[in-house]
Image 1: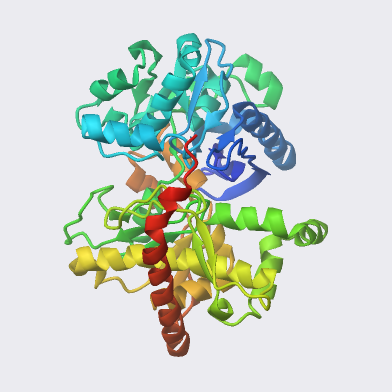
Image 2: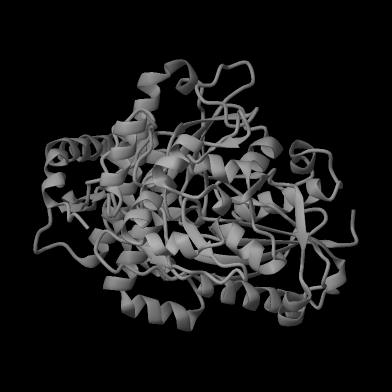
Length: 503
């Protein structure tokens, strides 16, 4: 296939991207904008849906202008985005609220109430607790709404006037039962949502609408271009399918880091996410890219301005300086739980956790803290991995490599830290745009170019690139600091609840 393009739109927690792929899944052009998060209170986190859409429109116009492609050759469009956040809209798809995004902690009490009264295992990250908080604190918002939409559904609705969602996003939000194909009505009723506010549910690859005349005039797209339902931004299915990774530890270094374990087909998974991998560790909350972004913005304005002039990432400049700091950051330990600790299926959740810099002295500098943040995030991921190894040793013992993806994979320093903390060789992908690639593959299936996601993934241009190997001396050194990290977590963990601000 050569004549045509797929347009993928990703509204991530930290960045909003519009990416144009050709029909062979080669990236042709990308426009990216920093997403903006508001923190009205220390434990709250919100974003403006109107800002998302303004960035999306600007990105579409930019890639069309830059590539000079004929918009009629864009065969299909799809959206993905951060999960759990809810936008209430009227019939014209005007947003009625700032979106309460996933790391927001205002609904801890509501999450505990739902768990206690309904026996549904959720935490404050997930949509039900946030919805219950909204219902109790802003009931008129729900009364005025025509539909509730997830983040990527809001963008798709603006583009195509389609008020729907997909089964995987709804299930990820703990509001939908994919096995029986229905919303979880006892939960919906407990929250107090009117059934008519719920969007129609489709499969992610289903074509649900087309670009409207109004959007075509605003963006340069061709009216009538098919638009699929889309999916959340965390899917790695095309990566796993295309690379046939075997037994590998997959480490995501984005806004919220996480771990997946790829396994051979003969192994029995604990949780079957797809035919090719099992999810053994859930995402941490705001303990990765979000933490580094906070540090750079609050403490490194000079590096930010210098990076802008040099047209490089400010993190590249910070990495260069941090590489001069000895491994272990000369005794600093950073607990990265800036908005709670949500470490997985085998490790206790603690939404009350907060960030801690342990061991700080007058001799430490900013760059020590930055390196200790990289190390602290890695230690927290290692703790998930240790819990997985304890719970499922047969799965874990076969893992022979770590595959890192997400924005953090661009940091050579971080890759070296991971190799030595995990004692595994580290690889990365030749294309870190896994979210938009997933959408492009889904578009191709929806259009009938491929019969399923596996067939599409096999045509994706993906390969592994080896980055670094562990070094025995550093493995031993990091092992000692990792033990200290665990001790600090265990001793301080019970104290966090006393500092919680009940919003």
